Every structure is written in C-alpha cells, then in structure tokens.
Length: 146
Image (cartoon, helix red, strand yellow):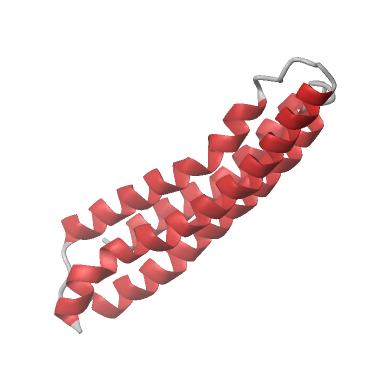
C-alpha cells in the first residue's frame, strides 16, 4: 500500500479538488451564459463584472496543488501513510465542496448583478467566505502534516 499511495495519493487531492472546481465553474458559467443571453435579448450591455465570479472556483486547483507539493516535500513512509491518506480525502473534499459552493454563489451573483450593481460588495464577501474555508483547510492540513 505504501508504494501505491506514494505514487497515487498526493495526486488524489488534486483530482478530488478539480472535480469540485469543474462543478463550481459549471454552476457559475451556466448562469453567466443566461445573463449574456438575456442582455443580448434586451439589447443591454453585458455586465463585465460577472466574469470574475465565473472563474472564482479555479483558485481551488491552486490550493490543492500547493498541498500536493507539500505532501511530496515531506515524503511518504509507512508511519504517516494512513494519516496522509485521510488528509488527502478529507481536505480534498472540503476544498471541492467549497469550490462548488463558490460556483453556486457566483451563479447567484451573476443573476443579481445583471440587474444592478448595488450589492456587489456583498457578493465579493460571500465568495471570500467560501474561499476562506478552502484556505483554512489547506493551511491546517499543512500544519498538521509536519
């Protein structure tokens, strides 16, 4: 099992997280396409501010890549194999769910910001809160893996 986890384990966190990133971008991307279609139909300009909300979940891939590199740096041996595997699954799922929720929040932001920009700051706060969950999961995992 040690050799199998040594080859596959660290990349498993990237795989799990990127699934959440794709789901999140799917949520917000579909909403952005709806906004673009509605704006074209009503002959209104497309609000440029919706595009950062579509790409916001991509940061999860960077967080998981940082964690992957940290796992490769500390090395995997028979003593820490089961702990690293549980961190891989747990932290990967936390970051993936955070990115999926971030995409859902981005979809809500796209729909609301197509009407007016009055609540723009609240949407950035919501995206930041979802992002903070992923960052704290990554940092706490890195601290505990020492």
